Length: 331
Image (cartoon, rainbow, N blue to C red; front, side):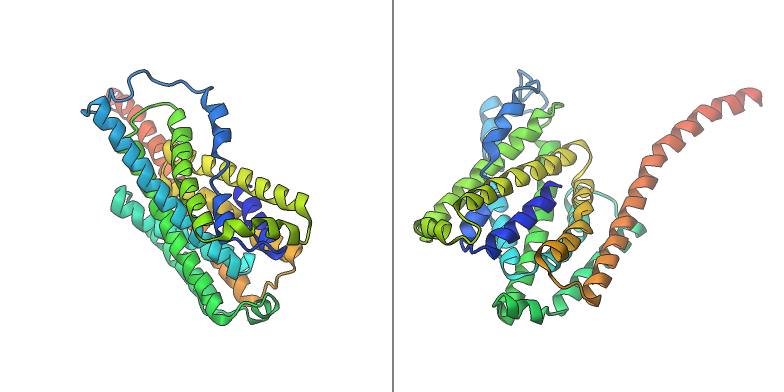
């Protein structure tokens, strides 16, 4: 729900006259201070490095470096997502974002040693075909309405694809960080990960906002916003809160399960956003988009079924382990 709300509000910002790419990128991470409040409710182990062979000093330096690099990657990834949302209709943007699951499966295999079964490969193929259909299909009528040239449309597609790959890489690196560096069994590490990576990403965006000169035009942008100043502020605040809700859920699922499972849960919004875009923004849902959405849902379902099989394996193994002694005794 956080992801769906954030994407729709992000499109609303641009449709109503918002022009600052850096501001639209900044709101994706700037609300991280609200996470300090729930952080107090989770236990913090006294010895933070008790499961590593590093000293506290080297452990802290390693952690700072990890948060810094992940924060830089997060800022760049958010920037590409923003450019994609600026130049593409919401429905097209959301369907291309489904390709992040395919990228995630590949990176999980390479970085996190996740196994690739036939069902997961089937999911990757279907999602790749879905994204390719959207990339090859040009929404000329919608682009002309929004004064988006064909070149900008292609820039939006490639930025969204690049952001999807970057996001998948980011999730896998976060999982690797939980496994190799943050070896703590408390949920506080999830909030800390989100807080400090968002802090670094927000600092990058603030520097970019004023270095690019966009910061000087924010007052004029607020005044020209079609829905008014109050709605302008509410749109930015709502977008920021929605992204934080989404991010905590994403990072939490990486910690509890895996980056691949987290990405699959993110795809639950796939059927919702294009339909909402048609209803709220009167976007066209032509045959190619419908086929692409169905392929993406099939790819998503393929992975869900694989996850169902994986979850049942431990139960079947436990049942066999219980039945075997009884069989041998009766024999």
